[in-house]
Image (cartoon, rainbow, N blue to C red; front, side, top):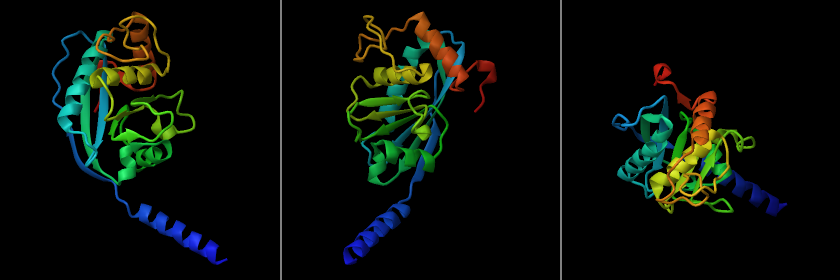
Length: 219
C-alpha cells in the first residue's frame, strides 16, 4: 500500500512539473525573400521553428530554406512566405519523438507546412530528417504536414527540399534515377525532379491546401 502511494505521488509530481513547463514564443518574423528567377505557377508558405538552446541559428536555417526553394523552383513552386519562429521550451521538446512532438504541435498550433529544427531524434529507427504527410499521420494527426530536421542532417538545403517534396506529394516513395532529388540518399548531385514528380507536388499540394495559385495567396 505504501509503495502504491509513493508511486502515485511520484506520478503526480511528474505531471505537475510537466504542467508547469511553459512553451513561449520568443520571436516571430518574416524572412525577406527575393523574387524567384524561375517562372512559377504555384506558391508555398512555410513556418520554420527552432528552439532557444537547441543549437540552431537563424542564419543557417535561412540559407538552407533558400537553397531548398531554388530546388523546388524547377517545378514552378515559389517560396512566397516564410515565417521564422523561435520557441523557448523544456528540453524534451527539442528532440523529435512522436508523443512529445504531438504535445508540442497541440500546444503551439502553426500554419503548415511546418519545419521543426530539432537537436536530434529519439525515434527508432533514427533518421536525420523525417517528413510526415497526410498518408503516414493517421495515428498522429497533429504532425501532418510537418518536417523534423536534426542537427546531424547533411546537405541541409537539399535534405529539406527532399522532405518537403515528400510532404507536398504526400508520398514516401523514393526514386532510383541518377541525379533525382528523391533518391533515398540525398546529396549535392541529386537535385533534379521529373515532370511527373512536379505535377504531383503541385496537384496534391494544392488539394491539401499546402500550395496555392498566386492569385489566391493569402497571408
